[in-house]
Image (cartoon, rainbow, N blue to C red; front, side):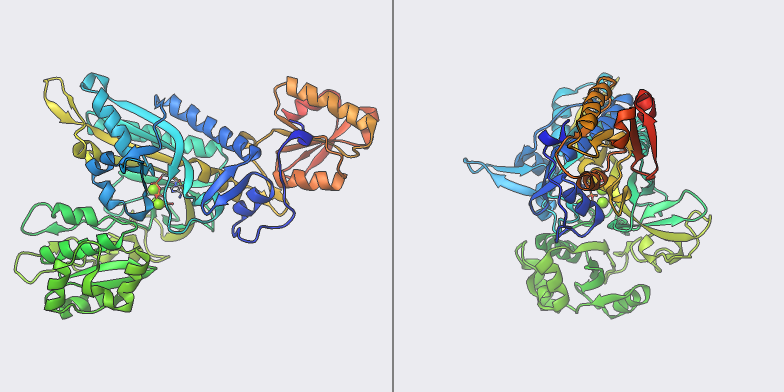
Length: 562
Ligand code: ATP
Ligand code: MG
Ligand code: MG
Ligand code: MG
């Protein structure tokens, strides 16, 4: 590509609203431009990196027998109603209506869509297991889109889904995916770590996240300094067990998932809690614990909670208020919303339930497995939020350290969550209908581009690893006015291209200083400068990463850049 014909709008100034290195550099070096909050154009250089990353992902997916398809971003609400997520997903789900007033969502993920497709087409065990993936645009109306491509509202994801007849088969695919993910991130040159994403402390290995280690990461990882143990401290709540039943009520399980919650959902927790004799709920709001007392005699409970963590006790609900809450229409918080602390929940709608600190007034109606210190020793790290640096690691090897990470991938054993809700069944060897067992596996492809930029940059600009660089060689002339230099550069532009190298040739009539600065900013791994020694057929090759440079006779050029 000739730079005179290319579209690489570089900026001298650091854009004011770009806080982190990758965002600043991707803007300055002309890889991306913002359209609106959390929505970006990939300019030609950005698009080339994206395509390189996608090619690596496709290779590794295809290698483990996953097949690519492409599903629509526009999804009918009915699918989301079947899974129940139309009601539980919250404001991150982008919803719209068509001209006939029919409801749609712009897919934030595709479990519903793929489950419907496989349900309608696969009827027998003979067609399973099946592993499908796509690389596609996703939409999530993030509360705080930020850091450029790292947290967008429109972004590119590789999402894969697998369907099985047995847990063993799911385990096998899960392990293959795990390995494929490790290969992908390794091939991108990244310093990353796979961490237990959920239920880790209880020993579960049903979900892992792949974290690129970086100080600007939004996730905190607790890891052992002496073993492979590593986990995201953003863990799911301990699932309550109801003494009088074998299983906690389904409604409670449904609400007791971490993540953003709407006011309507918070109101429905209170309702569910109240209906199940739960006296209090603990929320995690903007980094603080907020205890909402729902009903009954709370004082003992309050003391217990205070002993375990630094919770802000909001207030006691009076019997009259409790009744009102229970009768309040979904979508209102009722009288509980009067206090400042709960207003935080209401205003920002981000309350995430972390632990139902549950009790009951009647003998035998308690929930167990929910109260650290009461139901399990805090030292078991049933919840890593209680862990401190220097504590012994849960696997007994070494001590806990903390690091920050950017979540670039997530693998998850779903089980029958979606297949059950959406009736994805097959006939087994005996002609019996069975529910499919599923897994899902995501990579934030556009986030990955930014994560690479975050790890590979210096004070002069980006420093792309060869595997994902937009071009392999940046060719330029030191003196654009020199016919001799231009002739040699033109000749080697052709020859390098013929030898299979991706070459960006800076043929612009700019000063050498401008070209060098742009070249450092863009970060192509090798720079070939045709300069003063052009007459002798000697050029300078400079390695972007190390800064080392050496003179090379053009006859050796192809061998040198290879
Ligand atoms: P996060 O915790 O960062 O919000 P997530 O856990 O909600 O991510 P998943 O549902 O696991 O995301 O989606 C799979 C992958 O998609 C994530 O591992 C991440 O790499 C990427 N991803 C998720 N949200 C965004 C976003 N807003 N912008 C860019 N990439 C994203
Ligand atoms: Mg998210
Ligand atoms: Mg996450
Ligand atoms: Mg995730």
